[in-house]
Image (cartoon, rainbow, N blue to C red; front, top):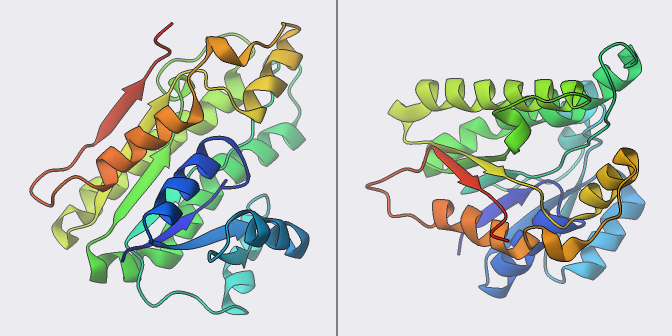
Length: 229
């Protein structure tokens, strides 16, 4: 039985990953922003454990986790949570920049730092769910794309640093996926949202687990997933 830490398990891709891992009997630790959210996750995923840490405030993550019981072993750390706000560079405020970079880049870096000792011992796996915006930036996507380009750099550096310790690092770049975030993006774009046009979250979940379950003689560095219709 493997032990997995997951951010963003409340909906979308993260929920699909948690469902699949729980169904096969693995041990899950799910990050929640507050105690109320932790109760919701415990009810949604029976048997999983919740860790309360607000990813929008990375400076407090270490302290928050020090007050809780953490797993002795970590086989994978799955960074799936994220936020997305659209806007032109001329209109974006520092509040939006700070919020986006904190949740999408700095919090994953801090969580990785905190659990790296356990990951080295288990020769575990760190998965960063990135975005097509982490490879190409377009108008009004500047702040989100910047955070995701940074996440790619974080993953690439971590892979180079930890390869000798047996820690595998994978970045997954999904195209538009039918999640609550995508519904919000369409609202910001002023477009009608039809989830049937986009990738099912479970398809991305299967892709993530493909990388996690790969035998130890190989490593998937980057996976790009695009809508098939």
